[in-house]
Image (cartoon, rainbow, N blue to C red):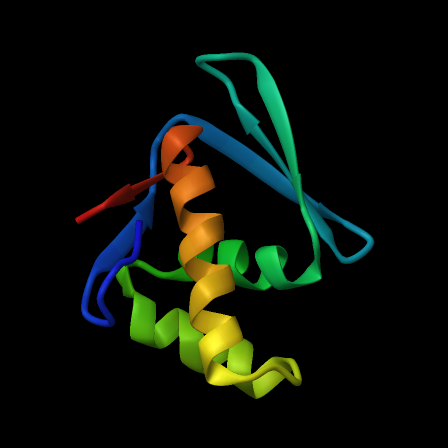
Amino acid sequence: MSYNSTQQFALTEKTVSTILDENSIILNYDQGIYYELNEVGSLIWKTLSESTEAVSLEQLKTNVLSSFEVTEDECIQDINSLLVELIEAELVTTI
């Protein structure tokens, strides 16, 4: 699945998370399953968790591109892949 740049995302209320080194550890407490995100995934998670409003794909892309050396196409592809996984795991929802 591929989301457009204006699509909005937010964390679900089913999660708690913490940062360990540069990785995010996330618990979906309804399912009792832990997830671990790498440095890039952690930046995306942090952006979502610190926002008081939904965050667009464009905002996520801008944050990743300003923090990591990656092409825009790779960035969008990686963010889309991660968001699909997070949505399937019921950690993130679309708005």
